[in-house]
Length: 454
Image (cartoon, rainbow, N blue to C red):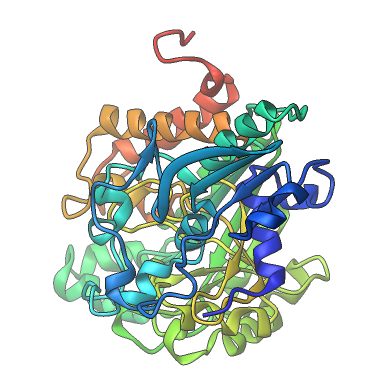
């Protein structure tokens, strides 16, 4: 596979640890070549390992297992730990370009299509990251820190990016906006729930009094975060607009007055994105669903098209899931987190443009790493944590994001922050955890070392 020149230039800039907008402004020269006669043209050279030209490219045999090579404590995937000087040039034989490409393109998923759960997802437990204990380390961002240190050894004045959270994304998937506001849910509660009397009382409530209508809580919390955080905060709600799988249930009508009222309320507080249906990643239906959402939510979009996307069930896992999105007008994806473990699935905490691992071409789609989803923390088949353990996990991730100048992205569902008594929330502390995490970020605790919290 040949990596395009555009993709190579992008990786060199990104792996050096700078934001995409800094491309071309670094003032130093980093090369990717094995030609020793060309080393003098650069301040620092990364020597290719042969990964992109390997006969096993795209095969399972090309995916490293545990016990990765390291320079000190810094793990990489291809090449060797050898570092040498050739004249004034510092030469690294650790192939940080191929290693970064592996993480940000989700290359290992291309090579291991048989490793999927019942929903077709590639899980953390099969990843090279978890096998090496690296899920909570943004290793691609660590490559940048190492490369900048090497450049300083050559005499270049290279500053470290400011240690801060650059942006906080507070995101909510509207999977089930109401608990009992349709005839189908009325029948369900009558037959399998609390009986006809309770079902009728739930059904007759105003939508804003429905047990699942916890949006006012999110509006209040998220508005406080926008006001109280030292960094930009943006709020997103992802609405479904189709789907025929049983995992898309409940399928709601975007033209229903209750849904339109909800979209109007959301439109005053946040941006609206598309929550791609369960099968859309395989069928390419995202474009149809996007147009359907735009038609229904038009006056709540401030005249802008829907360009933000998250796949239902976090089901994106192969190149086919991403390819149709730019063609449909989707510019930003927020799916990239593992369902079963919190951490840095892309090996970075910074937004990064996706490179197709099958073609080596740079796409127009920006991936925003999902830091943590509420279900991941408490579901017994996932991490199965309690409140204190979950908060500690999130705090560790926030500190890494702050250290590397990245973005934090939280996904919390309205159905997980209900207050009961019916339906009783599975884990009442999930609501308290969201409040506690936002308070922690508003207090600016993430830039303090453990043990020094106020």
